[in-house]
Length: 260
Image 1 (cartoon, rainbow, N blue to C red):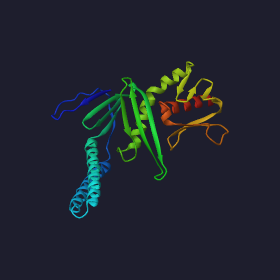
Image 2: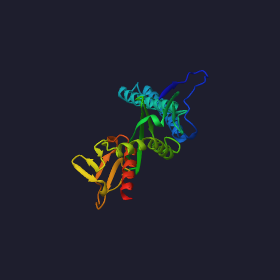
Image 3: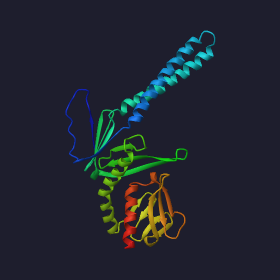
Image 4: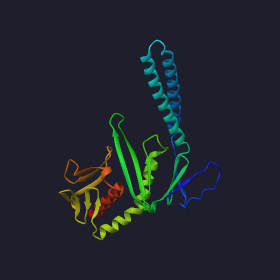
């Protein structure tokens, strides 16, 4: 992955040839406007509170300190929101046939699908909002990282962005995982180990003939279902599993082959 810092003056930046553009996902306009206006409002409220504190300084010092403290905190919060707005201006993820380009805060990060060694996901479920929030982390053979917040409203068409990343990475990594499995290699994904006989989870073992399917739960868990069981056989936090989507696809591929 390469990092290119854009200078203030106009210049020509050469990017690796990543093939045809599939889609482009910019930062949500609603989010950008929300950050800007909330920042402006907090700064104004902070200034007003500080002024009130200065006016109140004559009769009552404690009131002045309180208003001044609240005002300064409000100004700091507003400045932070405006800073976030500036950083996210021009932020976008471009997906190509052979990789992706991530633009943010004047920097350009590129990564080829074939160079990705790990696609990790962190899922958090908010019971009040009844919604899941995901962060994808891509690592490549150079040891560098791209983290993408794929929560709804952060990027335009976040669902499509997440699905395309999964598909492109899986298309490159799954054939290698299948080849290793067919060769009899023990495949370890966090606490789970796949063999040609079945799946090991600590002291528990489930033969392939009893595996029903693997799914990703909305609460951010990898869930393995067994035949003739009303509850899941294994439930593992996705943060404990490297390449969780490869594991998901590989298990379901093996189950399908055993069922033929």
